[in-house]
Image 1: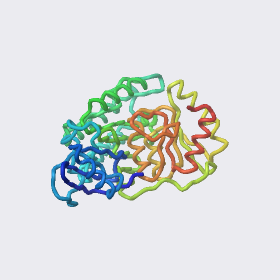
Image 2 (image 1 turned 45 degrees about the horizontal axis):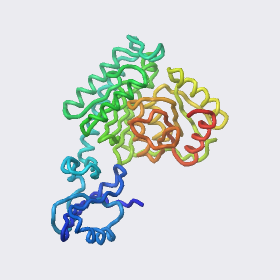
Image 3 (image 1 turned 45 degrees about the vertical axis):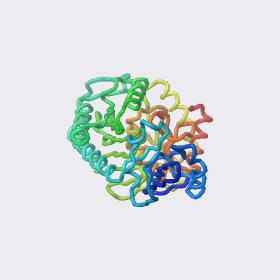
Image 4 (image 1 turned 90 degrees about the vertical axis):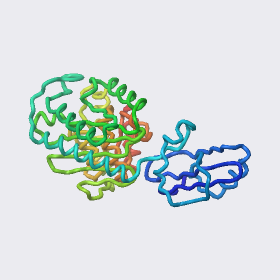
Length: 370
């Protein structure tokens, strides 16, 4: 069982041992209880203290002193103990840090949005993975402006943009793995124009998607729809918003009421699975929509316009921001096996949760979409 002491730290010292007890901010992350003692002679004292402390309070070596409860947990940073203890608790950013990151993400997304609005219908300059995977001169321009905006405020942060990575799922997975293995704490994950085919054809369903991960966990997400001037944003543990008003997923509780979105993927395997999925779902749901932008469909699940969005294969920059939006709006985001989202997940089901989510998974799996 996990209980949480929100936002406060405790230091306790006793004979033969110095214990630091840190309770993480319950808004972010999910960590197991870890126990350390600096002196084996303190084991009895440690057990006595532990009996009176909630299970989720973590132990790590700390400074001696009387118990105090006047310090925010964010003052404890992995860097201070990471060299000494590989299983130390990982504290997440403070609200002030998240606010600063969110502000820059909003600024960057609006800068890219202005470029998108001013260049709708841009000419295709390149085809990436295949003839259906398009690139214009505007895609890298938007990414460049986003990168410049981010690095002007956070020069030490890492950056993963779609236009920096060769086409194909192997290349995108490898690029993500490399940055997660070698990254600083912060990683920005960016799709400068999600829905390039829509953009090329003047269809107003294309937009930037910006996610920010801290030590591998998405903590900020922004999707800005410049055509409707709708800004979707979320911070881990602080809810999801559209234009600063709180949003929630839909209230549907049966698959028959579900408005389901899906993609029209360019890759052969994804196309095969999508055809299996649409054939299986169509008789069971209210309707199916294909809007051509993963970012938009995820944002619309988060605010209840759509009940569910599923896709067989997407990259981290397509879904990271939307995954946080949906979870913070009270929805559910898993892979096709029902396992929780992480940055390496590519096969997704995102929904309002509950019976709808479970039934969508069952229908897809029964149809051979795995």
